[in-house]
Length: 148
Image (cartoon, rainbow, N blue to C red; front, side, top):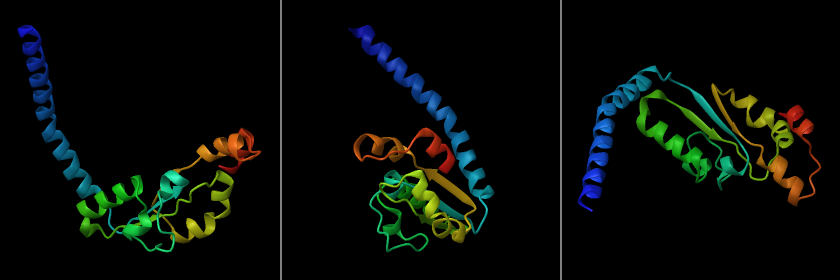
């Protein structure tokens, strides 16, 4: 039993040492990214429910916390705005729960092109398959590829 505790201690100590050794590299990368991040970027998150995450669709202005939803978009935007306040970033969430790729294409002009994003994140596609199983959607892989 003593050897087990000793092994566990040694393993944890070794992992901590490796992590501590990598910390300066992490800090350096973070500082470099902060310097390299351009100012005045427009960042658009586009997609389905994973992107939407119960956002308030009437709060569509940039950087509005309620307009970011409660998911990954909110976390990314909070990180960016909190860590780079002087960069004048404009972040938007235009995800709509339940949407499929063809619906994204239908709203592309209003929800994307008018915003002229510098960075675009698209997370969509699960409904294109899932709705064939549960919502009588007749989409195919060919339809998905064409629409995407």
